[in-house]
Structures are given as C-alpha cells and as structure tokens.
Amino acid sequence: MRATVLERQREPLKAVSLPDPVAGPNQLLLRVGACGVCRTDLHLRDGEIEATKLPVVLGHQIVARTEDGRRVGVPWLGWTDGECRYCRTGRENLCVHGRFTGRDIDGGFAELTVADERFCLPLPDELSDEQAAPLLCGGLIGYRALRLAGDGARLGLYGFGSAAHIICQVAAFQGREVFAFTRAGDERDQEFARSLGAVWAGASGDTPPEPLDAAIIFAPAGELVPAALKVLAPGGTVVCAGIHMSDIPSFPYEDLWHERTIRSVANLTRLDGQEFLALAPKVPVKTSITVYELDRAEDALSDLRAGRFEGTAVIVP
Image 1 (cartoon, rainbow, N blue to C red):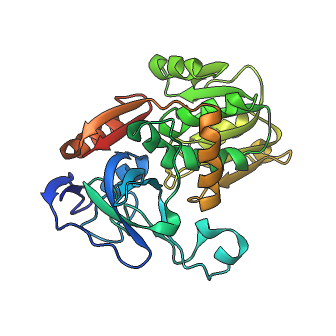
Image 2 (image 1 turned 180 degrees about the horizontal axis):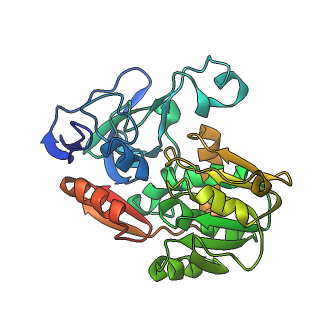
C-alpha cells in the first residue's frame, strides 16, 4: 500500500510503499477514504510531542470502509485496557495504558489501516468522507471542551481553526453567544467566524463587548490563558483544549479570584464520540476543508503551520 510516513521527528514526511496491514483479534482492516489533519500531527512531526514509535503513519481522523462495506470513523483514542481505575470509572480518556491512533498505532495517512473495532465510531450519512473527517478530532475534542466549559451563555474561542470552526456552529445552535479571537489582523478568520455564527470577532488581545462565561483555548499558545482570564466573568472557566501548549506565563492571583477556574482536556471517550456524532447532523455541522493528495501530506502540515487555509486539511489516498 501507499503511505506517507514520519520516519524521524523534525524531518519531512516521506511517501513510501509498505506491506498491507493485517487485522488482528478485535481489529478491522480498513480502506481509508479520507483522513483529517490535526495540529497534533504537526506537534508529532515537529517533535513537540514525543513519538512512541518510529517510523509511524500519522493521522487520527480517519473515515474508512470495512471489507464488507461499512463506513466507520477512527478517532485519536485507539485502545484502552478497560481495567485501570480510570476505565472503571467512565474516564477511559485517562487510561494509564491508553494507545492512540497515529502515535502508538499507525494511522490514516495511508491507503489501508487497521483499527480496534471497539473504538470505531458510526458516522452520519449526511456528510461525505472528506467532510466527516474533521469531526473525528476537531469535532470530538472541541465537543468535550465545550461540555467542560459549562452552560454559560457567552463563550470565547481562542484560535479559529479546525476545532473552533466546528464548535462555533454547535454553540450557536445551543443558543450561546460566541466571541472568536484570532491573531491580530487576521480579518479572514474573523469574517469566517462571523459567517459561522459568532456575534463578535477580534484579536486575541482585544476585550470583547461583554465578559465571557467561559473560554476555550484551541491555539497552542500559553500566553492566551492569562488573556482569557482577564475577560472572564466571575465563576467562569478557561478550558485548554490542546494536547500541547507553550508555557503559561505568570499572572496575578486577582485574575483567577472570584472562583474562576482553568482546566485542560485530555483525549476523548467513546461516549463523547457517540454523543457528538449524533448531534452533528442536527446542527447541522458544515466543515470547511482543503483537500490534499496522500503524497502531499507534508505540504498539508506546512500549510497548517503557516495558517494558509480555513478549517481543516484533509488527506485523500
């Protein structure tokens, strides 16, 4: 099969030919239709997250078909032990032995892959393979972050990329006011946010017209945490949604006082996936995608790093 592989971190991906994978117990052999590109793929490529196996096939937003023609989605969470205290208490996203697609398990930047059948998710029929792919991480992690942000009416989204452009639509559907924060001068993404239901869009250092009840930080920039706290109403929550973030600078306790909280999001559960993928067609969520052929996966990562597209890059074999 053809695949694009990360052989060494901090070096470009390489297009190669690999033996076809063979499904083991509880696994499905899958023909990949599309695979979304996530910032986590970029963190792995750039060495900001340690790769646990090399070479590795990146990609954990996989839309694929089984040998008998069923369409399934393969997310970041690829396997758990089912026995640790986290798994036994409904927190399989924190499993101490968890394995993740595109890091510990070869992912979807390939023509074929294998995945544990228990961790494959049903997909809404309304979306094409390319349109459905971003739901499997940007959508799922964004949805988990949205739930952890609470039910506040005014929601800030910092960094308007793959996850934010999906969750903006969900939050607007829920009747919330969405305030989008982008890089200074990024009028393209600010207009994009308004087109998806944001009531206000500005730069990350701007003060919104109303205090926020919650803020979700999708950009991997630690300096946004104090910035979000400064515009948060008492009792509000800042949710850090990424797997990697630069260091958070110090800030005065006064900005945290009045029962404000900061929390992170780690991975996802299968229940998150089932709930969100059932909700997405009701919104309905529309994904903005830029398609790249398999041998251009490195270009997709470069364009993601440079912010050259709206929404999500999607690899198609």
